[in-house]
Length: 118
Image (cartoon, rainbow, N blue to C red):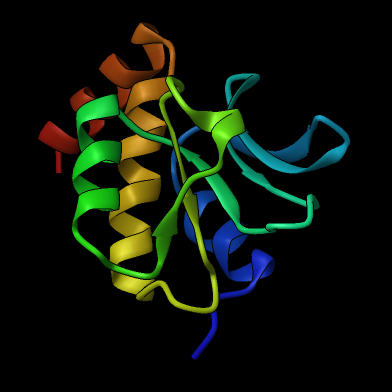
């Protein structure tokens, strides 16, 4: 079953300080004001999701059709995700990783502290 933008928002807004916003005039998710996911309205569509370059290379090399890129994203730490092909559990993991990359240090520390306290 395809993942919708609203599904992405629901998954991500459970993370600390995440808000739905806009970025480059398209729907986006930000943590403490820093973007980490954007619904692309360009012709190729998809979800632009922050990820380390090594992870991006791994995902693209995996052959999984849920992951792709365009020349615009060459050299940038963002993977494009086809929401019609991504497994929801995998997307939750990727959103969490994107959050960790984008969240300010103080927000990450608070989350770590809260998770240790559980």
